[in-house]
Every structure is written in structure tokens, then in C-alpha cells.
Image 1 (tube, helix red, strand yellow):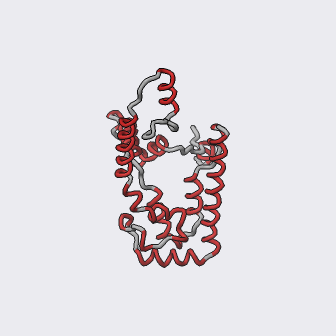
Image 2 (image 1 turned 120 degrees about the vertical axis):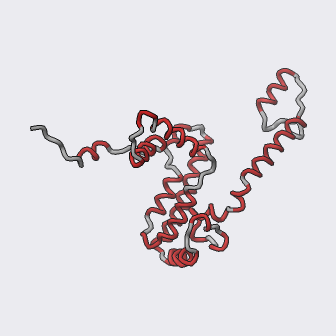
Image 3 (image 1 turned 90 degrees about the horizontal axis):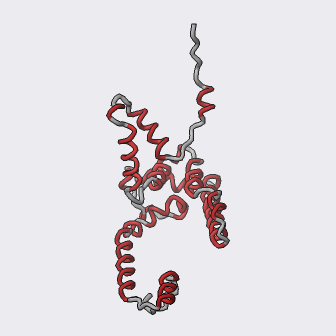
Length: 214
């Protein structure tokens, strides 16, 4: 932008060439710099907590002195001991070696589909979060402290959008005419509304006892 060649702004360049207009590149340069600084400031916490956020896929190479466990109410000593034990067990540590390999393959597939403009194929690629949750869910409960920390990191919200969406859905579901709705049922309705969870209705109905009329 500063050079005035507009190499990475094809539409603006096309407009300039077709209309022979004078583009104030200095104005756009200042605007872009302000946007960059704004995003850098907004996401500064992600940089300072880089080791904490990377833990979910890089648990085997994490230095526990560099992660922030305070918000999750986890005992530091227990976490360190269980993580050390995890690193020494080939069966369980292999889960994360396999995870990183799968994530790398996933990125390669995405790059190939992007390059070939295969947008439909992108939707068929497994979700990153599904692979990560799968690896952590495979660990036995003896690593509960480590899993608790990982799940805590995985549930950190990048924005307030999800919270605001959930509250909007809750207000629609629990209206004035549904004042008797219990919290348990409300929680179930919210899960159905705000997630991609699809209950197996046939299996659930098979487990219900039929009521016979006499």
C-alpha cells in the first residue's frame, strides 16, 4: 500500500486503472496500521498465554512453570506429577504424537483444497477440535488433573459472541408462558439449540417403557 502499487489490493487497483482515479494510499496505510495495532492490543493476552493455549496439543513439551493454571483451580503439584507420569507412558504419550501428526495432515489437506478451490471437500475434513477432544478423552481418569486443565483451556471463549448467543436463545426458550420450565430441561434445550448435537431419537425411544391402556 505504501509503495502505491496495490499488489495485494486487486479490486482497488482495478478501480484505479479503470477510472484513472487518484488513490490516497497514505490514508489507507494509516487506516491499516491502526487496525493492525488495534488487533495486536486486543489479542495481547493470547501472546502472553501462548504456552497455556498450546498445552492442548503440545502437552508433552510443555514447561509447567510457563503455563497459567490459576484460573482453573488446579493443584500445581498434582498437575506436575501426573504430567510427568504421562510423558513416561508410551501408550498415552503416543496419543499426542499421533494427534500432532493428524493435525499436520489436516493442514496439508486444507492447503490443497484451498489451492484447488474445492470448497465442498473442505466441509468433509474432520474438525480440529474433534481430533483434540478425542485425544484427551482417550486418557484414563488417573490423569484427571491434567484433563481438567486441558478441558479448561479448550473451553476458553475467544469472544463474547457465544455467550451472547446463548443468552438470546435462553430468553426465547424460557418465555413468560413457559415459567414452569425447570433448569434441567432448560439446559437440555440450550444444548440442542446452540450445538450441533443430534440425539439418537430411535435409540432413546427403544429404551423407554411403553404405556398400555386398559
